[in-house]
Image 1 (cartoon, rainbow, N blue to C red):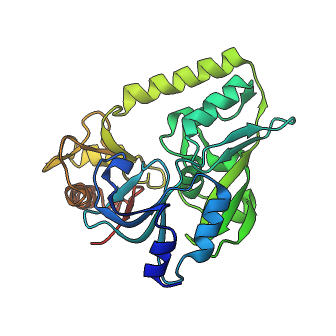
Image 2: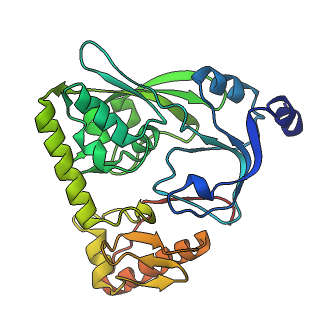
Image 3: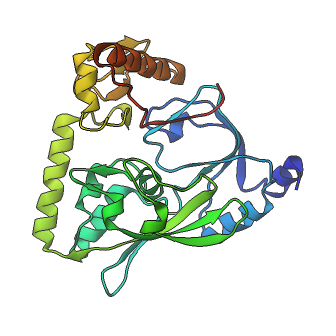
Length: 297
């Protein structure tokens, strides 16, 4: 199907030339050529099967750990926020849709006296994004609790990937962007609600005391090099509080870039590259971006 015919067929389900800034934690970014926000798996399947073969597809969850460039994204931008169902089986396995917020999954597990997912309360994002990044915090990461994930490719074909098949590693997995995650199953164990609640409170307290919260930021900017902490390398390079326009290295946690007021994506990305250069000059270590940067340059 040609792109114009595709737009006409799905005119009631898509948005054209929509600003993406409100869909990201940074609050920056250009427009999506085509924006699609499905509310059912079957709707997404039909959409993908009719998608023009040469039309690119990019998926957004909560918009954390993401920097969309000022010139926007060509093709289709898929937002999964309405695919957010969470369920539990009789044997304690929790199934969460890709658009479910990590913290909501943690609270769901707590309310059902299931332990093992407490760390999700401290991860800003969705289940789909967490799997894609093998997100982790406070001593745990997705690969520790994930059983398998249901996915759909750009042709509308389904597949179940086991934890092993995903080849999960530090902040990455061995799967191409051809696949869109739909839902995931997580193993849990019996737990006292009081114990789970207290553990989650500790995580929330630790996060709020060490990281900037309630402001426009993308989360951890750079991956930790082997045996090192990115924030310490950034601090040692004299970058705490460094600014580029309205983009600034957080004074509270050096591995966070914050949008003070009206920063552009370009200012944020430039600041990150300046920090990378200063860290390399000071320590000889090349930092790698953890935040995904996408869009037209």
